[in-house]
Length: 190
Image 1 (cartoon, rainbow, N blue to C red):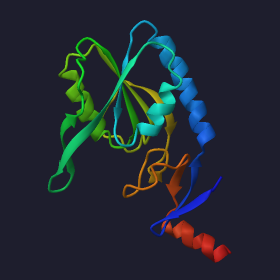
Image 2: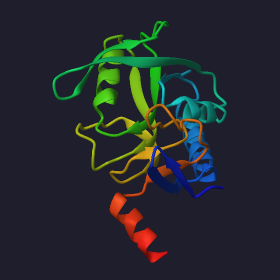
Image 3: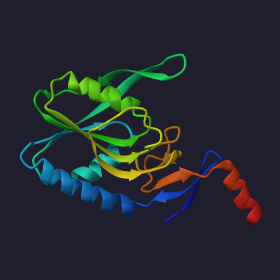
């Protein structure tokens, strides 16, 4: 396993290895199987980042379920990216139990818009399952983030579905960026 990687002159170090990810995913799957045993939930994956986590999560789900993927269409406003609409949902969700699958909850902006779009479809319930959450960055109150793989600090991460300029989604581990001053300290110590 490679503990350090470099992408476009940025250095990253291992944060969470794949064994830890899979163990956490198994535990989440067990909980969902029990809680949703008689509900036939619909897993809604938010692309692009969720694809690896959702694939591994659904391997742990043994109850009847359905799945779909959505993508948030957005436009760039003057200072921030504003979410316009949810794309790709082609099934009737009225009265269904929904589990939104996210790779990471950072500010919570995209999650808030995803939930609002799904609530308009008259779903019965919405739960959120996220691989990563940055509690210090979340700007909204969510009472339905029921499944979390890992809480992380305010750091830039790549791998296991998370990208840097479209790259590194395919890495099986999660890496965090090494702060520039720490990188320089390490070089001086060598």
